[in-house]
Image (tube, rainbow, N blue to C red; front, side):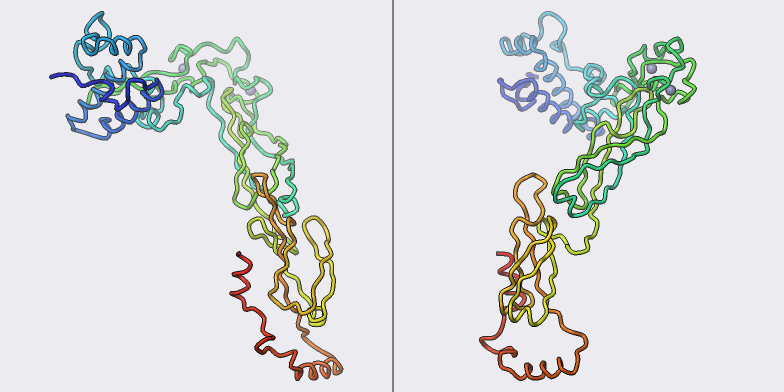
Length: 386
Ligand SMILES: [Zn+2]
Ligand SMILES: [Zn+2]
């Protein structure tokens, strides 16, 4: 049977670069991977075919030869796979390292997590720490630096994180030969699969310790607290999460540090509530001020501001103080302060006040009528959102 074109198998063109070829192989291999297609002979053949194509196209020399001579070129000079198709063992053995170290080749290779290459060779990574920080609206408006004491695992001072009593008590790990990783061959019904896993003896440190550090008993970490300065940008909101790389728990035996994750909370404010970047202030006017107009001071996040209340101001009117709200966390644009007008109605009155009110009650100007009517709630909302 004539062999299919390698580029066609992976669905790439002749000018595809290394990265594109790898990506294409990953896609095809994922589609026909035996874990996903148990007992499917056709899928297995396709999986092998893709591996063969990738074997050639991922190697610059072989690719050049293939480009020049086609499949005929693959039969010369040994090596390669010109002589016949690969078996499953070859595939997993040859590409074992890109199938990753988690023991599940599928996940680590296809999950795109970076695999073992991006990990530190030493020790186990420390875990992340999650803390909550509650902020006032004033702090959110300006941004703030918080010093927070965080209890966590820190690198042991006595052994500098190695976990060993002294340098004489450290030797290379016999199980993995110091690499921190071991290869395992698993038998599956489709043949043997080779995976790379963290060495069970040294947990990836590549070292064996004959005498442990007295302070940390070999962990390389001790429990303590550290005061961490956290720069919180202006404009954050409840539910946002910030992270600081490497500020979490120290890793065991010199492993990389985890991260500090900071969850933002908002404290409730005496005067204001928040609506996105806008700050809302409920203001109460007395009848007379609302009817006659006045000027008064209102609080803002940046201090008091004087505003004019025009005569004939009714309940539900919204004044806008431009730019007195909160900044956007991306750093452009400011929200406004919205002043929501309410009318204060007295709960009790003197005899005189009652008499005055009785007179006003009869006045045409004090009664809603066509021409006197204010805009209703929905109309005001429409204006507000436009
Ligand atoms: Zn120690
Ligand atoms: Zn080891």
